[in-house]
Length: 190
Image 1 (tube, rainbow, N blue to C red):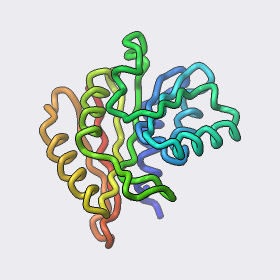
Image 2 (image 1 turned 180 degrees about the horizontal axis):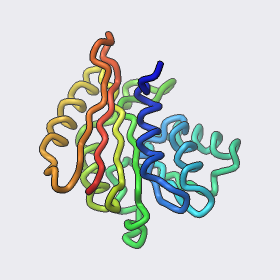
Image 3 (image 1 turned 180 degrees about the vertical axis):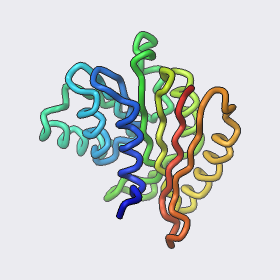
């Protein structure tokens, strides 16, 4: 396939924004795949902040990062992503170049524990203020469950209101796939 799938496109966007020495945020570490990807992008002199409320996610991510010898590049925080402002130092804002969210629930985990639009929008708002110009926030929106549909609607409503003088907002989706396929919202700070 010549068109990027949703997850490869999310990574492509992050690769355009993040360089060695930068700071990135994985707002939903899950099983650590994106955290590992970001750790490789920021390199030895960069830092990734990884948030997740579930102990199972933090443990799985820790294991994955240790296996690939990049745990020293990541600070894992077992708290909600709405806490980004309390965790990331103001001194690091100029190096903050990328963030990713995989909204929904932990694959292989408890499906009753899901992301919510209130915490997601709080985190997006904070990151947009904190992030350096040309930084990018990527949200992969999984909406095949009731809470996911509400989060999708609230996120779309929020991003449609972002002033184009402050950020570019992109929606990337496949429109002919069945079963509520995930899609991307990307916000590039101007």
